[in-house]
Image (tube, rainbow, N blue to C red):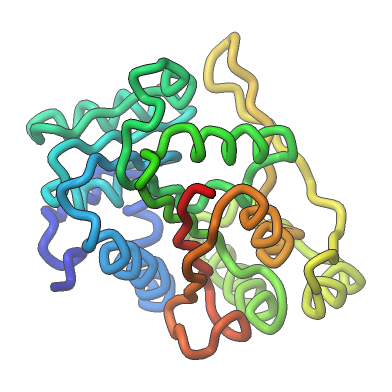
Length: 264
């Protein structure tokens, strides 16, 4: 079942991400982002009836699609305003709640989730936050649980196609490409032929969610999924690495890579 077609359109439209991406009037943007969530639905379906944590839930789009599969589903995000908005929009759904990411530090969350999903988060983490998030994912998942991580492919031929289309979409005022920075020719060439150790300077941005909560993060520029893959394998057993939307092309011409992980 294509769950993106059966979820209440008003519920999805209430989220900023869904409005700009999944419900975008540009068919390529809508298809590419919808395909990511179709893949996510397919991958989490075997874990129905386990407790679910969506780490970095954003506007709650993923939980809108799958919450009814799980007896308990928690969305966690660093943005308190976004959490409050999700709590309001999803108030009628039993078993679904939203918390601040820092509130997951409590003992009640340790090892409490049979499935932990972390989509479109790690590519934005500065180094110290990356280590913290990976530690959190290990701590929060149950001993026999599964961690599902996804990040974008931003190297190789995919990078050229993405940058061209992002520029076109930006000119048209479509999508959400505020932090997809421009590449100089040298950096673009470097990342098109990136190996596991390849790196270019990654700009750092700042967001202030509250007077006492400054947050630093990367955009997409310079993100290398191969380097991250090596780091993930230091923390987890990676049972499977998949790609979407055209899995058979692997990392050559795909937009997304998925890691299905378990604890060592």
